[in-house]
Image (cartoon, rainbow, N blue to C red; front, top):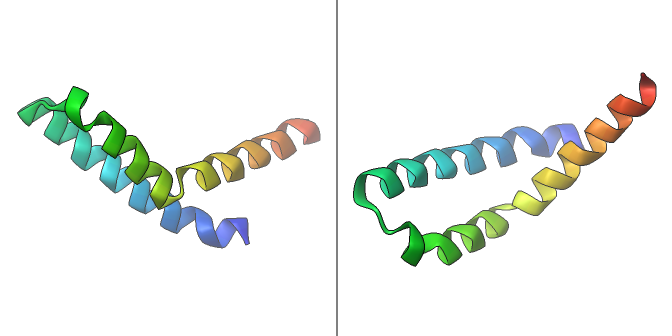
Length: 64
């Protein structure tokens, strides 16, 4: 289940982060737009992505 969700979450979030990074650099507005940026990331499933990656890392480390 994690493996199926990971590509979608990663692609969507990475695309949004890269777009907003370029916008913040070229047009500014990071102070005014930060809260909306973070909210959008959370709405896109950032917390779920972090949970999946954290759990995967924990499993990886426990195997060593």
